[in-house]
Image (cartoon, rainbow over the protein chains, first blue to last red):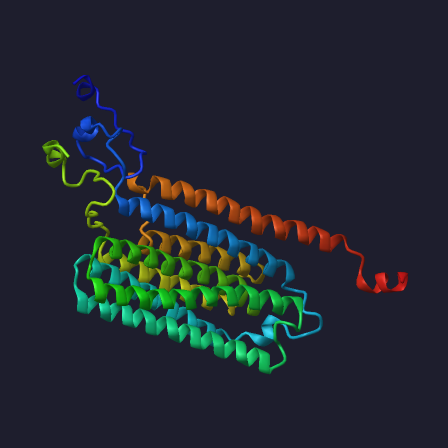
Length: 221
Length: 129
């Protein structure tokens, strides 16, 4: 029992809870045992999200470098409609908020509120996608497709990649809704939802960089 | 397992596969504060982009500062990245990610702007052909 007299608790250990008396140091699982699965799963998915953000940073760098390479074609100032972009931003921000409300309803195991929040999340995400597709179609119709200039290639790659993420996120949202309906608020389903909500919020963070670098810096200043 | 398993505090660690603990996040209030701040920062961004309220050459810097602030708001109030010990590893990974992002974007823009500045003007290059 010499272990109990000098309990060592590493405050930086994964899953450490502040203020918890270190009684479990004697559990024989080494520094209190493994962290809860929810923490480990969240951490792993966070690493994936960061790698995704690093990939986006390469696309952002490409766009920043090629921003002025319009090859005599239309510039961002002529193409971008900031009112349209503001609407897209509002949709995505609101859907991020309702996704947060859905995670609260999931914690309370409140199925009707969960389904309502997720439905609104999907509708707002769908509205965002519809706005983006309209914008792309409008650009192509005005002769500003991805093949027109290096600027437009970089634009369609960056914004299209984000749009593709939103599309996959929508499919994932519908899947996780169906899983909750079919299997209930099980612990593993709750962890899958945690990953989805992290993904959805991260997409909104990327959109913040996107509307600032691409649209506001491209059209205004 | 031994009966000693049950005397561990409920909010201490549990082994993998056991019922996870309910996250004690800020609740609806956290999301509401985050939404309010994000809306304010977004409106500020869109307002300053097309206005002459601030000195013209400073607008890009103002927009980038507003964007970074809004990303911070999203991280804290939506993704719940905090200074709690639970999040130490998440914060360390985030710091590394931010480092790479700044190296990739900042380095590319820096190098390419120097290359562009040193390039021969297109007209002069045409004459050399």
